Amino acid sequence: MAELEADILSSWVNWDADLVTRPELVHALSGGSSHSSFLVSGLSSRGSTDYFVVRVENSHNRQLAMPVHQEVALMRWAKGLAPQVVFQNSLLLVSAYIEAPQWTPPGQLRTIATGLRELHNLPPPAGLADFDLLQHCDVYWTQLGQPQRHHDFYRAWRDQLDEVLRSYPDRCLCHNDLNPGNMLLHDSTLVLLDWEYAAINSPWFDLASLAEFGQLDQRDLQLLSQHYGPDSDLHAIEQFRPVVRLLEWLWLSLQGATELAEHSRQRLLQLQYLQ
Image 1 (cartoon, rainbow, N blue to C red):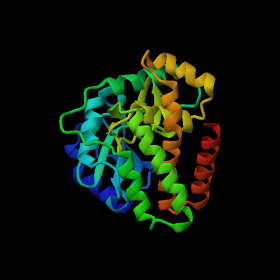
Image 2 (cartoon, rainbow, N blue to C red):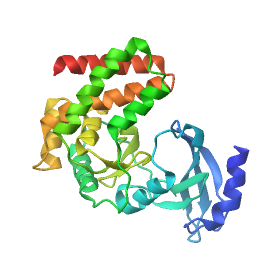
Image 3 (tube, one colour):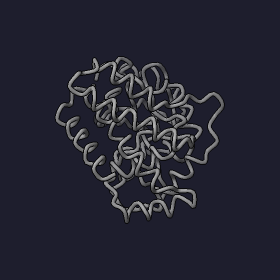
C-alpha cells in the first residue's frame, strides 16, 4: 500500500486529468492474477471529486497476456468501449473510474450484442498481435508439466480445437476475456474492462465466452445472435464453447485452483456429451 501511495505521489501531476490535489486511496478493488487494482479520488479544478482506477502490474504473473503497451493502445483505439486511460508507465495503468453495474446475465442482450458487434467491426490497428489459441493452450500445458494423468484428455481436446479453428477461420479484433465481471452497462452502452488479452482472434471465441460465463441457454443465444447481426452463426458459438472451457481449465490448473479447474474439466465432459 505504501508503494502505491509513493508511486501516485510521483506520477499524478502527469495524469491526463483535471486534478488540483494529489489523489488519495479510497479502497482496494478486486484484482486479476497479473495485477492489483485500487480506487483513488482527487479534487478537480471544477470543484468536483474525480475517481480513477489505479492498476499495479505484477509482471511475474502476467504470463501470456498481451504487452501492456498493446493493451493501452487498444483501449484508446476502442474509445467508448473501454475506460479512458489517463496514465501508464511500467508499473501503473490509470483509467477513469466508471460507476456502472456489471452485466447480470441474461439481461440486456441487445446492448451486449450491439457493443460486441461494434468491437468486432473495428479495423484492427496495424501490427496488432494475433491471439493464437492453439499456442496459448500448448504453452499452458507445457508450464503445467504435461501431467500424464491428463495427457489423453488434453490431446483429444487439442485435436478438437485444431479442427474447430480450421472450420471457422474468421478473425477480427476481440476482447478475449468476456466474463460478466469485465462487462459494465453504462448509459445503455457496453464498456469492457481488463483488456490484457485483447488481440486478433475468432469472434466466435468472444461470443462463446458470453454463452459459457453468462450461462446462456438456447433461447438466450438465439436472441444474442439476432441482435449481433445476420452473419452470426449459432453452430460456431456452440463449437467454441468447449474451447473457452479448455483454456479456462488449463489456466485454473496453472494457478493451482484445483477445485475450480476440476469444475471446468467436468464442464468440458458435459459439453462433449451435449455435442
